[in-house]
Image (cartoon, rainbow, N blue to C red):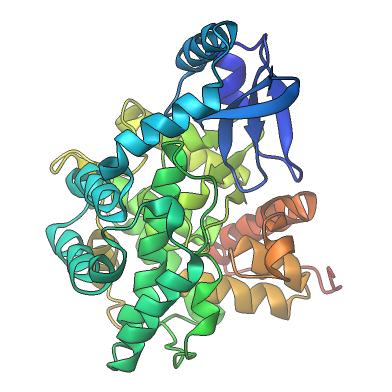
Length: 398
């Protein structure tokens, strides 16, 4: 029998796993991070499964109430799945792509900038709603989303075409959390679009990094934003992933930061091993924002800090046009590759695609011990740069 505390601590593994409660109820956890309440039952001599909904949207207590309701239906010789399907048909309006998209947009309106909200709304209204808006989300296939993106691509708006696919994917994952569907068909659709010209973000060479660290340490502005930049140098995450970091995602015992799939560019969960230096930064920050949802909480706006806040600090330090938030990722990648660290471990830590579509679902947990050691050595290396020492061993790590 499960408890609330046990359910909260359950993490995804490399294979799908079921955690039993009682009377046929169990929680199914997928490698991609999905957590679904299901009920196993028999009706007319045949075994069936009822999907109740996803956790945490459906709590343990709510799942048990749904189980008890289904058992009453079975006692009356009524199939719970038939009742569920009948209910879904009655509330079709709430399962339409447009209805779900507008609900998702409204939910995030308070934590995003107005121009981001208006930009996303424009993509929905101009490019996605005309074709998908009135379709029940469980009837939309990957080819339908791709057709919308192809139309955008045909008019020359390549960046908008690329953006439309993950934006649609957010709605599928929102529907998954609501228990309406179980799969997101969008993660690999971008590969069918024309490749775009790679734009290299401004970044420093490793030889230029010690003066940057010195200026960063001397910076006396907003301590929360300063800590964000310091943590960015130690974690290789994207700016958006850092900004939206939540305290509940951090396991201080295992020193791991687990980012759910719906926050990641590639729609796969991601694990960031936290070095002792990264843990120290978070412990220092805990008295300032530990009572809030977001680690980098802006008390003035009551939202997570903006990406512009990071760039403003970098400009104030005198590095306008020379360094960006994304530049930390390129710097780490180049340096670690030059030092002979395992290519796949570096790419997985950067949350890049490695391998085929099947293996990508498991990548977040691969080479974790190796990556933990690599991230600690990287943090030690950053510390040594402050003393103008290059400490990486001469031998190869691969």
